[in-house]
Image 1 (cartoon, rainbow, N blue to C red):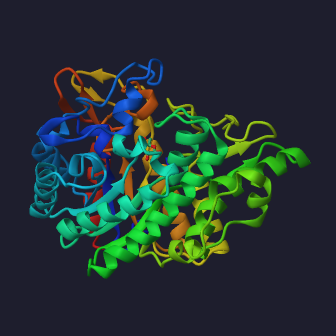
Image 2 (image 1 turned 135 degrees about the horizontal axis):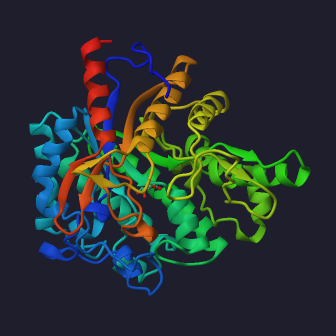
Length: 444
Ligand code: FCB
């Protein structure tokens, strides 16, 4: 295991843990919450690996106080959470739900009372079902609805949160949700996916402008899932596949947001599936961000004909089938730093699912602990080489509802017993706590 040098991280580096609303809250229709596309998707036979849903999840809606105590006990500075749009605006447009907002007011105030910085995400995928009935993210009207929702959240919570992220992983919403169709809303059309991505970008830029115009001072940005993409071989076909995967998975997102341009080679590949862009859209998209969040889990190795396939390459593989490749985090950051003019970066998610076992009430998750430690070391490496990174968040605080994998995959550094809702700190959580305490003691 790599040792992390004591001087690698500045004193004000933000260490945190992350979750999202649908994955932990439960309380699927409590206190006036409306349904989301993930509530609907879970009802489709075969959509979720263990036929589960988010109706109870980690029951965080009831247990939020104890969960905040748990977070504070780890010694982190920040907690990244998301607001469930249909909890605060059941139909996604029109009336807001006071009881829903009251929950997030309590949660944010509870963080502040414990000295935790709130890092809020507006869209971690749980779009109100009513908006999906009108076309969801394929419908340009959803952009305006999102801006209104974002403005209301900023009006109510913007004075107390440190950070507001518009969208978590637009690639997942666009591609898994609308092209592959294994995530909600389960649509299978490349043209739809590309139009969705465009609307997500537009709603991001317009929401930033609207929230700032209201005087909201929180840092604002977006979170992308990014991977370095390597060709499986030196063959021309594999290199072309890698170029396409990098174009569609990284450059499409980064260049739209940072440069206000879609890469010409990707547009050419898309042909008739290219998005409908209205005059002025790209200007609205590229408003400066205070940060760019990156979720890093793995590298991608692609070969012709298998654009999203991750090959094992002899490395360790997680329970998700994802290659463990910490060096990829450094490679990715250095490449972005070289190719783009970046805002400050946060690693907003990083972590791994492994099959845990409880032995005498303990979870010795050495592989997860090593995963986190080695990725933090890779991050330190990239920072030493000049990349500005302001924070790192472990995914996830709790075992939770892992989308189409249901509860079968455990990402938590804290175990959740779904029968009793008991939380148990795994060894990885104890390690993270000790690591953070040591960072503080060094007073670097
Ligand atoms: C990311 C998601 C997060 C979680 C992790 C494992 O893509 O943002 O909700 O599912 O993967």
